[in-house]
Image (cartoon, rainbow, N blue to C red; front, side, top):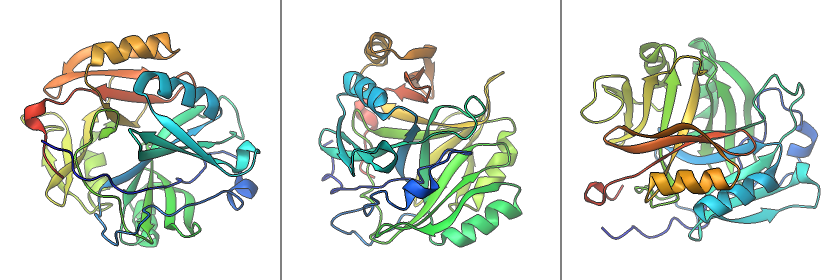
Length: 300
């Protein structure tokens, strides 16, 4: 299947903060571009419209992902790292961003993590729902330049996610190509309770089985598509959202990641009907890689 037209110059800087990070003064000076340029004025509530790396070392992260996935980068702002924003591009298409953060209490929080933003129609209402259902508002709803309104939350188990109402609409909705974000999955202590929590965030339809043909976990569906999965977490793994990157070969990707300084925490294995693996980048951010059969490709 031919890939749909590229999504335009989607530039989205997430919230710029880890839980407990200190950069409030820098945030006001950071460059916050719109989510889509040109504007689409189309919104897909419940879809993860962007993924952003919050990290102590943007340079090391960029070098790693460039070697492993061939990503390229564009950095905006002054020389002060606290005020810059780095756009991630895969094959020329913007797919995410990187923001420097400095934790207030080093060692208490992960030094880096990828955070996904969910498209919602009303960020303030989402914040109220999060608190009502036992979650926490980490960064309250706020206007971010010409981009729209956004906020950062923790679910009741500590999973970090964001929400955005874009002023210019969401990027085009299509199945990811190689090197792009394919899937988002929450590894939770109580998958059932987390499915109930997130149901109203999208809003989502909740289906049994984290993937088609499976019985464990749940799917969060919106707009006729599965947007994310929720699975019981492995022992000793904290509740976390794990983003998946589509690759041609998991084995080859794992080899490149190891050579580039990453740590393979789950060796290639069969899961969700395909090969996947979990990797930590050199700054400590976890992500997964997975193959996707050609026959399964479809326009979104």
